[in-house]
Image (cartoon, rainbow, N blue to C red):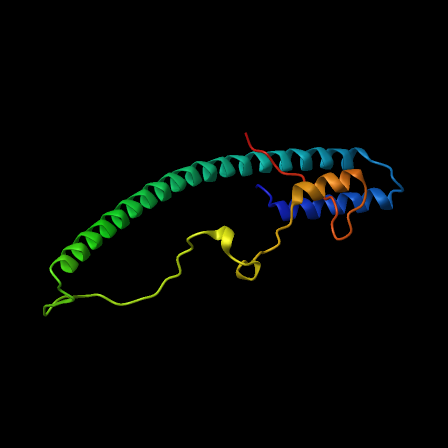
Length: 161
């Protein structure tokens, strides 16, 4: 019977507790149980690795499908915009402001938009800035000394090849 990771962890705690109770002495029985535990965790790791590889493959397929659908959406939007421009130009050329049928209504709506002609001529009060943290600069600063408000953290990332 295969054990869960939780069960393996609990058994490891029991073994460590038993070693502690034996004042650090590892008996033949404890050594055998430790070897079996190591085999269980290695087997579990391999099984997890295969599942991870399967998910990576499925992830790639999903990414490809998302890309295909995004390209299809982009093409549809481009065609829609082209058709809107063509019908707008034709209606304006003929002086028609509204077309109504029982199934469809086409009309123009008036709106206002700001167009920037020369950004260099604008006053500073018309600009907005959002500060962005530069993690690369902070990393360099941390390697040189201390950076208040930041710290270096070491992560261990599992690689499945």
